[in-house]
Image 1 (spheres, rainbow, N blue to C red):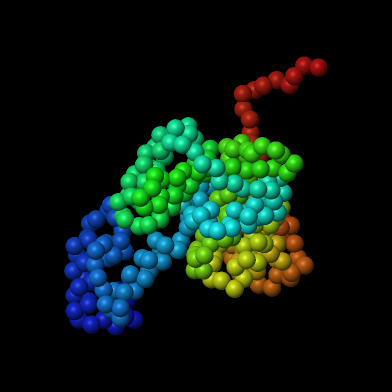
Image 2: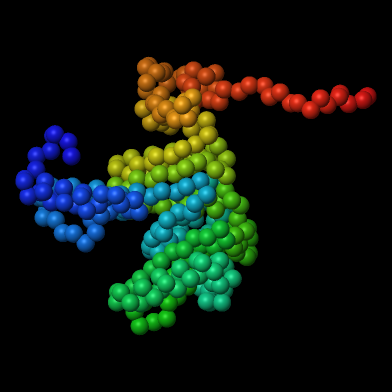
Length: 309
């Protein structure tokens, strides 16, 4: 618990009791256990665990390199489709309109794999059971973006996201877009979230994106959330993001593999004064900051003779 914590005897006893009951458990987290059906007074020491748990569950959004965005309400709000259309157009995707089109259950079965269809049915069942007047869910797969709206007393309405391109008379299916364009949809929530304390953790933010698009995404994030506490933590192999006009030096970190099979994480700030006009990218490739592979020329065996002329 640490010596700096002052606890009442009953709180310390309660904590030690919880810890003893949890001892040896390997299938769940202690923080989750402290928030499982327990009630704490607002000024109780245990309310710290309640706030920490709430932050981790509600505010941290993790998107892996091959993952899709978690469920989002962005596509459900008022004129958001117009804003999203403008955003995608600004990334030079050729898209000038994002639309919602109604679909049937039969069409849903064609658009989504069976496990996801089953998930939708379970969510629909839960929505109907909770008694709320209006419920919404979004489902994202490799081939479709689905929105389900349930109004109390009515049949659920299912819609899919469709896209219209410049000078095109017909709409395009989500699955017909490039992987890069689909990837941008995963980042819409990053720019339009209403959670002013959200933390987005994104692995390989540059995957399938042109370097200019990756840079534009970070620029937009900085501009949109300049007055918010929204944070972006991402990994990347895109050296164009090491731009001092884009990021402060304490915001650029390197990961270097150690010979002991671990990794070392350190900031550009550790290298002292780095002038703005200095090319961090160039110095990185020169090995000034580490974090680059140490390559050896491969020796190809096999005794192959040189090709005859």
